[in-house]
Length: 136
Image (cartoon, rainbow, N blue to C red; front, side, top):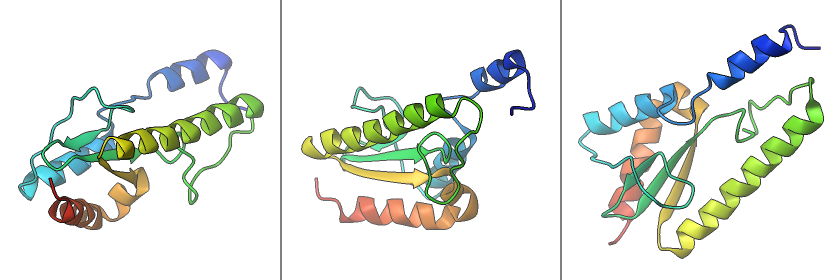
């Protein structure tokens, strides 16, 4: 059972941001600090969090809850069926977006929020190597 009232839970959930999240901001700052210049706004499918248009690299920073991280996802007990369906739709949409972007010639990299928190340098290195390997 939820420890918050429905009104309190609704308020908490409504305050969750879909863009400019803390993990995104941390990663963007680290990329900028090492000289990697990126763009934020695009009309690409799925609206990637960070793009490198010249190299056609799209980066998504996925939240562990919203995208069902295999290490950290815990299904809510309250309203379980709703959340199971919601998260399943998110995961399927992620796969579809990856296929669409790949078909358009983009290289897609998804990074979990816990990876940004726990190993930021490794995330930056991964993105740097992807950019260096990508031919335009």
